[in-house]
Length: 180
Image: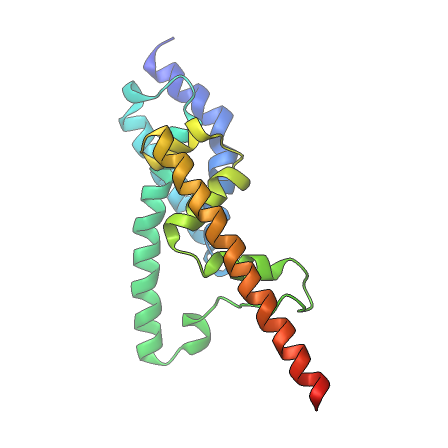
């Protein structure tokens, strides 16, 4: 199979997986950016089509992570500018949930995840949302399998600790309500 054919097959097979990968990492207000980032990913994949591995999805995720980093930096600069100009609602589009007993059950998990470092968040998202195994995670994170396994282990431990902290905070708040 030629490199052009390999690229075409990777594009057909993985376009939607890469689109979902990107969409899950951008805020809802930035949905218009998804197509831009995905276009960048496949543009890079086209230029580097001779390097496409036999199983290209983890490699495409690595490219997408780098494209997303560039986009997020640009969006951050835009938010800071809007904030300075006084458009606070636009600049602060993300909404968080206060506690595990909030209206939307499960949304507090997203807040616990958001409290982790970007590296921990990415390791957890790649294995949970993108369903990558350790070997694929290593390709996407551009590290060894051992390093990927250790990063995932530590990220899971930190997430558990953050969830426990949030639950203790809620329990302490309820105990204070009982005394009133």
